[in-house]
Length: 393
Image (cartoon, rainbow, N blue to C red; front, side, top):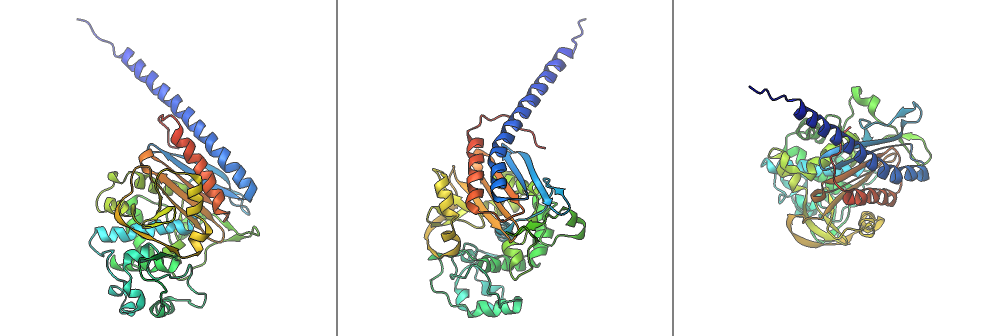
């Protein structure tokens, strides 16, 4: 009787594992070089105290941490450091609304007066929730006026608002517009906005370190932002701040969120439907297609178009729109969103069919073109790199 020894097979398996490990290490080293070359000069030029960068390639996450979360305490940045996301928060607001829709709690064709009695019959009530979520409702301004300090005052102001364009004809980027959109979505789910994210959406997405209201136990991880004078600052609790720019999150959680957007099929319904719903395009606005939360750039991609679509004119001015037949974005589409508060500057982008994405979180509000240029350089090289197995760390 011949006994076959398993050792040659085991040796071959070990050799393959070691080869894969070396390949993964080499690939991670190459990606670090790509990220370092884009990020280190940017931080030096704009005097950014700290930055957490995460990339995902073929479902694997890599983290690159730079500088300090707090200059005063000399706390280093990690992938678990909490940063203020600024307007990237709007992607969660949009996902909450599509999550409510997937559960049959609201329809994007509804009008705000259905949920908020004070707005019923107002000029603003002619707009749909979809138009509020795509900034095409009523040419609402970028910010709530300084004189509006609480919910009662904001509803009085919104009821009296007189739009100068019909719904669905112009896009004017607006915190009050998406703020009201998020407020209605939370009401439909039976919570206030912070509770709806923290008790429903974040747990469903597996985000354990994302907050609207940072709890006492997580304050040690909360970075200090820095204003243009270098002084430590954090976001103020203004009206519609939670819905439009109030989420605090880490690079580890955000890259998980990006991965869910790259491949929603791994999510259970209705969350899968919610994420897919934020990737539908509704309006062409210059070089960009406006969806819910995410802004889309359809191929061919180029830095010039990204800079134009994220320009001051797109943020601060009303722009004419062309209504599109709602449908999922075609292959080659890049999704992105910028964000900022007084002390933080952020950017997120991903290309689903290339299975690549990036999150850049910084504790200084540095110029948007610098973020776009650095991220584009990284993504361009990731897209052209030969695909090997990378290791998460």
